[in-house]
Image (cartoon, rainbow, N blue to C red):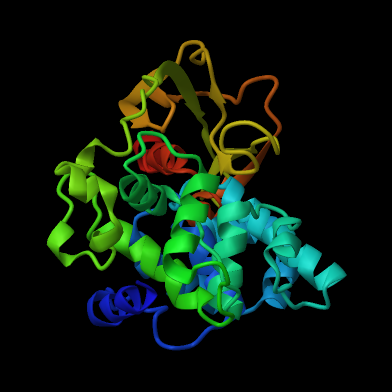
Length: 330
């Protein structure tokens, strides 16, 4: 079955830029972290810029966190950037600048969970293992015809199917990547292409006639509403140029460590409305109001930056939409 999966992967895998035959551990790490909850097209577009600025772990470790967040701007889920920066510093300090090979050691690094540890060990070092993400979980659920299998059950079933009792060293790289690719392109949620699947002979879900029953859909929690008000304050410096009040958020909470105009639960007094828009997060739907304010909130610790320098900050999408209105305040 493993040979069938390999034949399929070599023939059908998408030509993604990191599938060029090189198994660079750092680049594999960055791809895995970028790919978490991010579309592949976005990863393709943003990977070259990130690697150009931070070509290795040492460069990333030596960088200031604000600079890392600025390069990450627009990718969302900024805790990934903070964890990747912390990981780089930990590897430089504790591992001589080289990523450890084994999943257990990788999982002790900041921001590395079971999936990323297994995927990285497999793809960078050839350590055999099944990395279970949403795509692989769906493949496993259908193979087992199980409505809600645990990651351990999926891992055990796929390991037995592909390796038998003794995984062979060196086979981890293609297996880990091929299973994710299979779930993303063939064993899709709504219209799986079962005739093209190399694992179909062992798939109980396909044998049942309707593999889309597996896994059973999970109940989703509706996003909670949240109203926020941006206090957009623009002043002039000694040369008459526009300067904007910018607040750096605390290191915990939504958009931790990022910069933006002060956002508060209440609007500024006697302010002029500039815009209102809806900003959606996975768990929140934000009713965002942007106001032209005469001064920052009293509790805000702001610094004043030239309008031209805002693009170099680590900002969330909601902040960029607010800052785009600076010209309207002049």
